[in-house]
Image 1 (cartoon, rainbow, N blue to C red):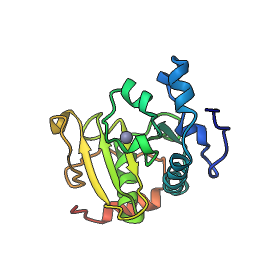
Image 2: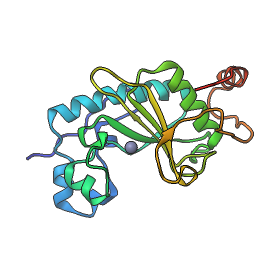
Image 3: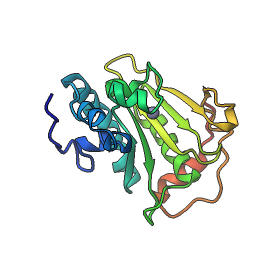
Image 4: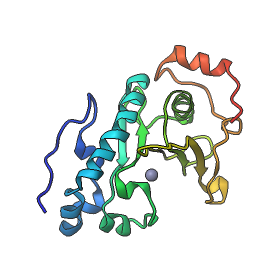
Length: 194
Ligand SMILES: [Zn+2]
């Protein structure tokens, strides 16, 4: 199979953002498979990228894709679940950056997760690993229809089990100046009970 060309999917994201993988870079067979996604996978990536671009537009600062599509060989190599939505290109793991280009803090993650919950039709959003205050990344997925809008979290603090995402128990420190301060104040004024 021929490797696909890199194409721009939206203002801030390219197809290769969703294909690149350090594990694939170290193994040419995995890389060949990883960079030869099917048309179905590409159409799923385009759909989930539409959601991520909306998050990016609202947040106003760069967002790093840490994992998008995973071919079967890559998914096996990284120990991904056999039913992972990454296998079909329906899911993305991402890390928002702060105004200094470093990974955002728990406050920014909570702000983004809250905005996604209030504004986006998604299938699953998962706050993954890191600490209960600041995850290592957010996982966001989109299916063709019957998106469940299911919020979950997993990490040491959940005993490495998926539990419903609880905004009330997500305690964060001082806000930073990154992101959109006016929206942040709005969030502080709301009580979230999901
Ligand atoms: Zn994921």
